[in-house]
Amino acid sequence: MIDGLLGGLGNLLDPFNLLILIAGILLGFIGGGIPGISGTMLVIILLPVSYAMDPTAAFLLLTSIYATSVFSGSISAILFRTPGTPEAVATVFDGYPMAQKGEGGKALGVSIFSSATGGVIGTIVLIFLTPLLATFALSFAAPEYFALALMGLTVVASLSAGNLVKGFIGVAFGLFIATIGLDSMTGTPRFTFGSGQLMSGIDFIPVLIGLFAISEVLRQVQKRPRQTSKQKVRTELPSWGLMKRISNVIGRSSLLGIFIGILPGIGATTAAMLSYSEAARWSKKPEEFGTGIPEGVAAPESANNAAAMGAMVPLLSLGIPGSATTAILLGAFILHGIQPGPLMFQTQGSLVYTILIGLLFANLLILLIAKPFISVFSKILRVPYSVIGPLIVLFCIIGTFAVRNSIFDVGVMLLFGVIGYFLENAKFPLAPIVLGVVLGPIAEDQFRRAMQMFNNDFTIFFTRPISLVLLILALISVVYPLFKKWINHRKAKLRGDKNTIAS
Image (cartoon, rainbow, N blue to C red; front, side):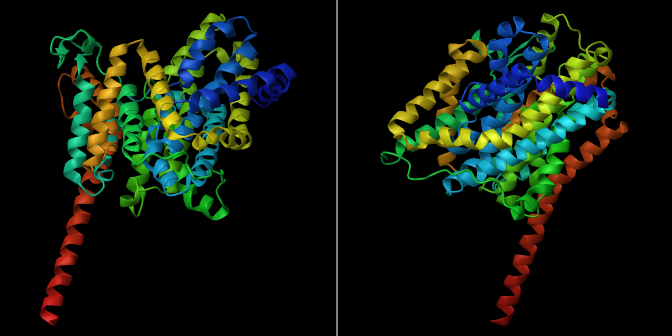
């Protein structure tokens, strides 16, 4: 391994390969920062270009785009409430409120530090524990996947801004959206009302872009016209005190992100949502999440970058893609005549270790390159909103259309923009809706698959140790906030009675 890593470092330091790596990092920053364009889309676009390149240069380009675009989606999420990539949707919850309070530079600094740390931790784990983690991932079956998704859904109690009823309505609405289309197991149309467009379901990207980006444009338009933003965004990397404050969150979220990333088909978006929910669950003041706190940025940003690295584990060791982008990378390997799998470290050791060292450098360079990039990108804030607002809508339309080449998806995005606008005016939390849309399909598919695999035996969820532990955690996360609320109510009532007696 040491020889392989040193050989990979030598390959990376070749001037041409180093230039390709830096080009990939910059492309990842640009693609992730512009709403609607994701790392997945950039990798697809550059796949034909990579075919004409040497495999080492080709995969340094594609993997560096993949690593850095996951981070850069947080830039527009924090500054404009418009997630540049799906992985940044949870960053909006606290990142944008921080920017609204004049702490945009602080939020961006936390995002840079958390992303780089999560990515580096994920890459180190990828280098040293790939075979072991791949074997562990294979022990997950449908019951464990369902329990994991359910545990994520139950955090609605912490994300409902003190109103559990609205929170559960929101997550139920998100789950309903996730059921629209053809049944994935039987092919039966559900809630399509005879529409051919709805047969393929409602993709979550138009939903999240509409709920957050378009609704925010509508809110800004409703305000009195403003020429430019007075706020100057100067990215501030976290102070030593803030680093200590968020270190536990970053550590837990990075490990959770790696764990989610190695599970085939789950992805960094789910990792970001689950890590945000777990950060709220572990917090002493969960009610502060969603109001603009550094922990709410650190959790999803460290998790999604760690998950991106974790998704490479099953790809390199088993030949199984862990996410949509790694599925495209699998195609790129095959295009170059390389078969990922157990023998890849023996047959293509030099290439594998060069990729791993390249990912490590890409995540470290986020600390150096992100700040000057953001200083240029944030100049957009000085543009009058009468210009930037329509541009945001335009990018959202282009990005949404590009996902499935569907005008219908654009209509869905605009519809959810209006829905999000009215829901926010009614003080209705949007996070539970996104939670239901992202985790709903996983929960439903894996529950039904488990029922088929084990002859409709419900006890399977409680007889498998990992599944049982996850379900117990889910139950605690629902019961504890209710119990805590009841205790606080009792204390308030007792104080009231004592005051009455004293008077």
